[in-house]
Length: 170
Image (cartoon, rainbow, N blue to C red; front, side, top):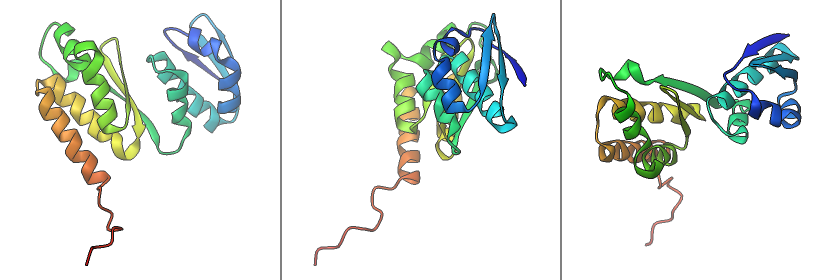
């Protein structure tokens, strides 16, 4: 049995049946605490999923953490900027109408949220480093266009368009 504490558990409570079935644990939620019961590995995975839900990820995205190659990473904004006010830094991360954080997610094939002073990322282990580097560079002041270019190049390196399967015309 593991007792876990979260800022808000409304979404966890609202999706109790789905979460218990997919995570193979039983849990009771009250106040800000969740008491999970099950096999130790299943409780560990449930803890990661509940943490992702607490960080504002939708339940279906948080459940990706049940897959072996998906991970959750957190970036503390204060660790990468000297600015006193984080409001302009957060605005750069979000971008106009949410476009910057959305594009970083699309180009890196990861999912991102901004929760308090933390950027959280869920993605495949081999792709998440690109999203992390992009966010850290953006926080440090890099231009969005440079970030997008970096992510485009990274995408081509990991998933090259030409896999050598085309036959040459001759």
